[in-house]
Image (cartoon, rainbow, N blue to C red; front, side, top):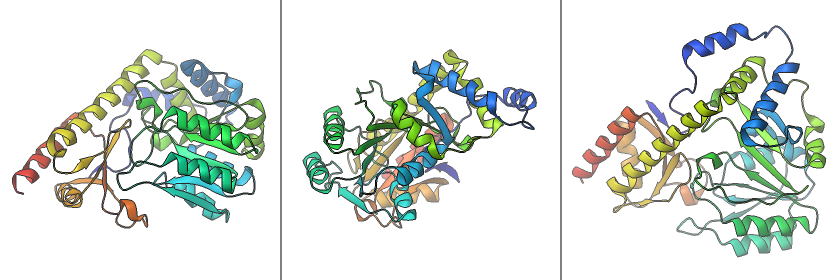
Length: 332
């Protein structure tokens, strides 16, 4: 089966020869003091950020878990649907979770979110921006207002920007001790298997998040591969641009092929979210023809149980997918 269910890159950013050279040069018999510093400097330089305010962990999941442990005693607020691990980690630590559901068209009532914050005073509000699994970008005004409301009583806003690198014009984001930014090298960087998650905030908040950090949070080989990639910015930007091109191609296939007979949500990510009466049938047809999209019939989330999400693949795989969709439509 061709995997189009995990929002990964279908290709590597580095050649086999480069990976082999990095592996040979990596002194993985030693601890990772220099390697973590090298990655921190490379990441900060690529993004134009302060290296003192950046930290790494074993995927964004570890940062989500740390926030669950460290940030307050009150309830946790999230949207539904959103990244499932927010709720999973809350359950691990018996944290109460409050969910604001989407409307039938998968939009959100932002006034309802404001009202919940003012009434329930959650310890933090965690939100993927753009949304996973829907793909849309929340308005900057919504993000700003939630940050202001949370700051009034000491709550935190956690912005999970796993897919923000796919956005053409990223919106401004609020800053302050109460705002935590989570990012990852798993998506547009093509390093999902290396499990590298990034957190950034102010000095005060980073000290809090790092108070339960491991002395060596990532293995040396992962650090070396990621640092090498970030130390070649022109090449990395070209690779990222190609990921965006594949994303646009995927969206075109669905919008042009079936956009008039089922709903395809606008997406600022490397995946498309489909729903409607015919969406499950198309999803099953695609599965029967060798592709594995993300289905939600066993998700326990009623609003997405009949939806199907598709992520990018290689050009050849996307061309074949377009033909599979065309054949499905012809037999309706």
